[in-house]
Length: 441
Image 1 (cartoon, rainbow, N blue to C red):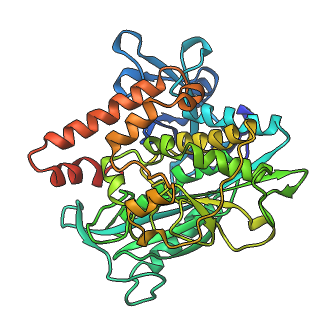
Image 2 (spheres, rainbow, N blue to C red):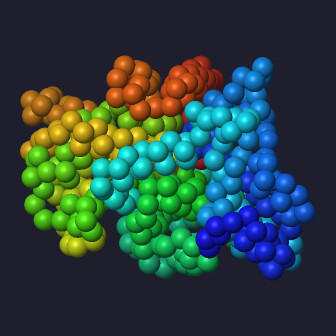
């Protein structure tokens, strides 16, 4: 759906028996929030925006200056098909501003939009795709999530080992109904683990799609008495869940990732920038203490390197042709804020382009079999081993200080370090993590 004017939206509401409208947004960590507006109040909400208490959202505002305003992006209008057919519910994704239209540094959609605009100014078009992994768990008699995975299946298994094939189908059909474009779906390596990939789109559209996909997966799973968890490592001894980010660059309709990638080519410089800043990005692409349990096993990267096809690398170039040619960044996980994560990944590539960085040589070996000492001999850096280390690296980064909105970084780091301290002082850290993140992420 694509509605250009407020009147288009109001006509749609009347024609489709819409009674409630959700104004959805994300906090700086990517947790989705929303305010529901009755259809009768929608004209005023579209004209004036919807005010809310920014001090009640972690990382947003102080109590003494707390008001923020939601401004809906009309192009994101969609019906929520799992809500009642009578008295329908529709939703917008919103940007956030301060009263009077002043910019707000915590508006992560706006941050991603600005970074994407920089590519257009350079005559480049950047497309982004996402591969999102998640787990399905049973719920108890009161509907609360358990730690029991839905099935015992493994990679690409089918029924009866894969008990989720009908649910994945329902998720994909719901995605299509809401304007998303699923590409592949299958059972993943872990027990109860699944993956659904999207076709590429603009950076902002893909970030919106990630948020909408998680909402769809939770709703469809809940309707079946299950819980969809996007926690990076919900089960010890099982594969972690990644959010692989695929990126391609076009100039004059030509895919710059097609064919050989010269070290000093635009595609090479873009990749070099992402690799050069990958350690600094990790606090944003992997935002939980739990995220760091995933690195280095079950096809999750550990070292800063690249090659073609090789799934042990941080960045790999898939063996594809034409419009499918791309680079795949394998470190992010689905707990991240996709607007911040994708925005900063693009900013890293942009930094590589602007400074004409040269791409290093590929590392054509299985890095899962490489210990840190051998990696050091090869000159390979490691991704941060803990969230505390990732925050320390990010705080010392001139690159992040240059690109991140003023004030957002400090609030983000403070909240992350608070998460680490709470986990460290918990009587039962594993139980604390389950209570705090298992249901919410």
